[in-house]
Image (tube, rainbow, N blue to C red; front, side):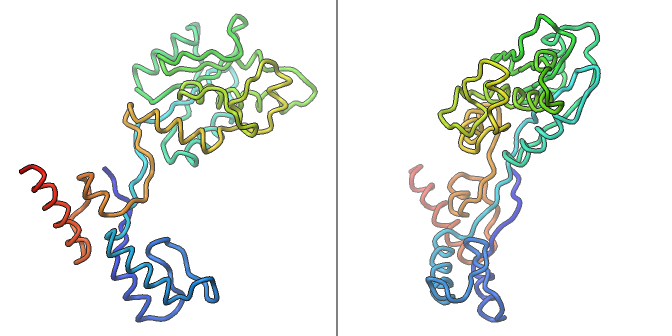
Length: 264
């Protein structure tokens, strides 16, 4: 388990009290403005109570297998690079983008081979030269999605085909990730049955609520969400680092003693 940072409880309060200047709450991580609903002294007192109870906060980085986006068209574009960028921002997880021709192999053959070699969380590939392939094919058990760019061409707007590819890639991610049709209108996971309906949807990504649902489903494959949690919770879960101050030491001893008594 990787730990990105630790709030050291009493040290932050002591420095703020001694040095003057803007007070940054060690609980929220944000500066406290003067003249707010509560005085700075009230905020400090609140923070000290919280820190004594929690021991400060740990930042637990997201981790898990990568997603692989594969552009297997004869002329790859940057559409998948943008999808990967947004995916990383939304999930704090890694995603790889590969651009390589599939040769004479079928899309599913290519996908299965890459899944076996790279073992990604899922693979979504964009293909062309497959007139028999539907616009979107999803194989949930294989964790594979295939978008047929040839079926997404047409229209007066030259940018429309690539935007359609982007939208269908996100839909593939959602369906593989266990999402059904979304009740939210501002989500790409809508019932869409034509290119005109696809073009009419102005939100080429999955909304945060659905993204969180998908991440919960990915736990079975080792995906862990980014968390900012109390030191006490980390001690209870059994992965906390050794205490660095008296408050954390007291929490450590209390939790460990409690677990010892439970065994008896």
